Amino acid sequence: MALPAMAANLATPVGLAYLVASLSAFGTSALAAMTVLDRVIQFSYCAFFALPGALAPVLGQNIGASRDDRVRSAVIFTRRLVVCYGLAVWLVLLLCGGMIADLYQLGDEARAVFMAFCLWGGGLWVLIGLDFVAIAVFLTMNRSWWVAVFAWLRATAGTVPFVFAGTHWFGSSGALPGMFTGNALIALVSITTASLTAKRFFTSRAPVMSVGAH
Picture 1 (cartoon, rainbow, N blue to C red):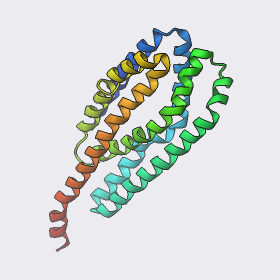
Picture 2 (picture 1 turned 90 degrees about the vertical axis):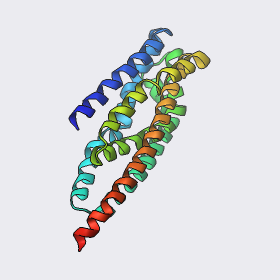
Picture 3 (picture 1 turned 60 degrees about the vertical axis):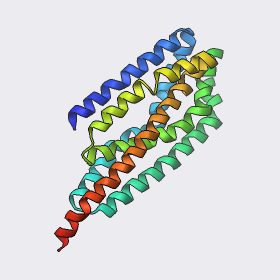
Picture 4 (picture 1 turned 30 degrees about the vertical axis):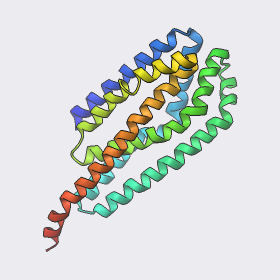
């Protein structure tokens, strides 16, 4: 599990490097917005970032105890929690985005970048949040390398073309929504793969558990 996790962590700086390089073409104001957004995202979605570390032990313990019903319940509950939490954060960003921009005294260019995230990024982060649940599923169901695979897909195919298209069509304000759109699409594939992985995992365990019960 350690090696796939290390490989996955190496992917994030690659995607961010391309994003920062793209925003730098629009001047320091756009980069200032990126700095503010980094703090806002880290604070607003701290619960999402903690999910794999919190959920994986719960899943692993119940898998070891052959309580697949509890594993399913934990995954379903966490997904619902992610959706509710993500929508609540999005609503707060929509209502308070202007005040936050004023608090940081963002100029016109920086404000446009920040408000574009508040308008679109918050909704896309609901899907990205569900991807953290998928990570916990992969880690506990013998598919840990999928974590690294999807991390690199997000940093490359889910970032480069979408940031390029966003900045080409909408300027600096299109960079972050572009990246999060690509990340959300990769997250959707990851979530689907995790669901199929869980289904196959439980199906493969059913005969073994049946024999153990007898």
